[in-house]
Image (cartoon, rainbow, N blue to C red; front, side, top):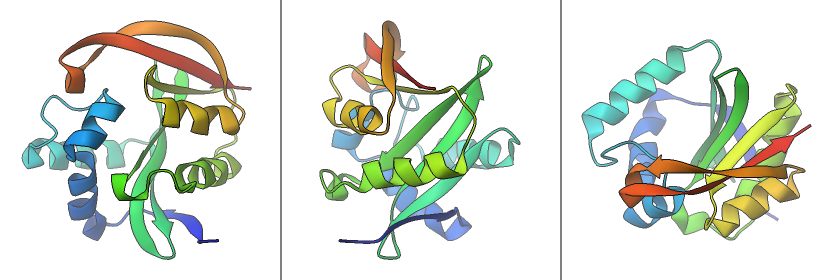
Length: 157
């Protein structure tokens, strides 16, 4: 079994993270992305801003020491949400599930919320496997889809 670990995000990770977060298939599946995932200046400004916020945790996900994604949490409207992004080349290998499990060991605030496009079955499976339970759906604007789609909302107690 491969070793999945979390570590502090480093400035040198940003090029790889930008490439992961601008991959068209990944962007489509994530749905709720920046307006223009290919805009490097906007990406850099966003990363600088979120890395400076005290209520945001943002970590690198590695597999056998290689950067394969990110995971984090942020507070929105008083609720702490989990977010993660795994490089598409590593989908289906259990990396997201192991990263979420490791992250939940670090972040003990509860409840913790997770959200995913309702057709993103892989991400919903990862959250459910980690103990998140569906509490409803919302219709939200998804930049990557160019309109409103259904989003599933889950909570971990």
